[in-house]
Amino acid sequence: MRNFIPLALALAVTATPAHADDAAEARGIIDKAVQAVGGEAKLATARAHTQKVVGTFFGPAGAIAFTGEWAVNLPDQLRQTTESESDGMKFRTVKVIAGDKGWLRVNDTLEELDKDTLATEHEQTYAVHVATLLPLKDKEFVLAPLGESKVGERPAVGVKVTREDRPTVALFFDKEKGWLLKAEFRVKVHNTPVRQEVFYDDYEDADGLKRPKKTTIKRDGKVLVESAVTEFKPLDKIDAKLFERP
Image (cartoon, rainbow, N blue to C red):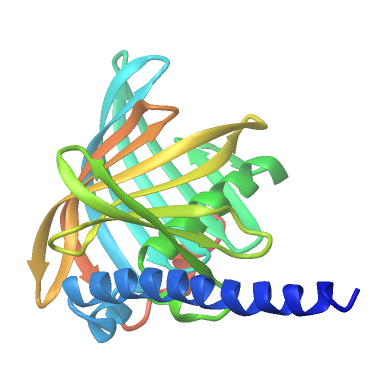
């Protein structure tokens, strides 16, 4: 027993610096990414924002073009309004997530989101929140490096983000430029876990804040949505009525 105790202490002492080094490496990657897109102050201005988008949804009925307007107040408020047309029919869809409530209106039909659907929406909104990078300063987030890889043709470095009772999110950053190229996490779709990847591309400067203009969402490797931002407006304050029952 006397021999075991010094050995255990020695293992603990040698293991701790390695863990600290990993955390420091991951933190360095995040800090570089924050500076690459404009710094903490600029990122904070975009916590609440509206944006207009154009894109294509790839579903069971094939590719459907849409235009949309988003209102976002992170971490848990979202309103998406889209206009689309399929088989000669026009659709106006409004989805609202407001904390523990959610609704979906398609033309004149309104439904309240059930528990499972709302949980999936929360998983996706949480990943969006993580991808803004600023929340990662909080101690409840645990960061670990994922090493080097590639996103498309771009050399990348990865960081794994974990938090109790939340999905694990893997973030991949451009090794040279620093900004985010991809977020990867798992969500449940009809109670089946799937791998969701969100790719960020075509960064542009807007008043000192660099943001990706193009986004591609894949589920289990298949493209689900391609979209491009046509207008982006950071807001000091967002109208609370936007997140009421539509």
